[in-house]
Length: 202
Ligand code: ADP
Ligand code: 5GP
Image (tube, rainbow, N blue to C red):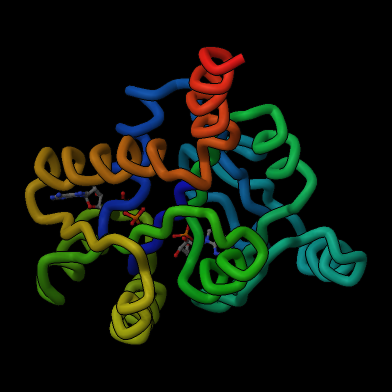
């Protein structure tokens, strides 16, 4: 599990799409949200877009392994599809906020948690405005929330600064590849090597 968090506008979607392009077998956890789709966003691909009533009903039935209210909308990760991908041995990417990441860490402590930082406040504002997808109000709210999100970065496993995109991608890629070598993610490996000593003795 590769969990990627960042203040809105930092470049998370940009970096995630580069990662999915290079590693097409990555599973992606498609979140549920009550926010309206942006231009170009497809239901079931970028998000599952649902009404507030549907979201609340799913939440009451315990269908989410984490959920949070972010910038005035609800967002959540459904447990079943994630479990299915993990059980099939797939690596799974998560694009979620810091509140969700902290809940997810309790359920899946073996995940790798990465925090992406913008180089500065000024650059974040310029990226949010330049993206052209959010209203003035929404940008102001996202900028205000960014500081609180950055203050949560201390408990993440890795920090990547998205200043130069290619450099940030190189670091994120390295984090992902390093994660694949974690002992917790290589069940049976050590035993299988040690077995070759047993075979020699037997
Ligand atoms: P997020 O998913 O974190 O909200 P996006 O990936 O949508 O952010 O990026 C926000 C805007 O910043 C987009 O217009 C994107 O093209 C741009 N962007 C992303 N990374 C960089 C970078 N390293 N330098 C300059 N602009 C960037
Ligand atoms: P956006 O509206 O810009 O797509 O996303 C706003 C924020 O919600 C981002 O920080 C994004 O990571 C977060 N988010 C997206 N999906 C989920 C989710 O399933 N759970 C949580 N907790 N946050 C999410």
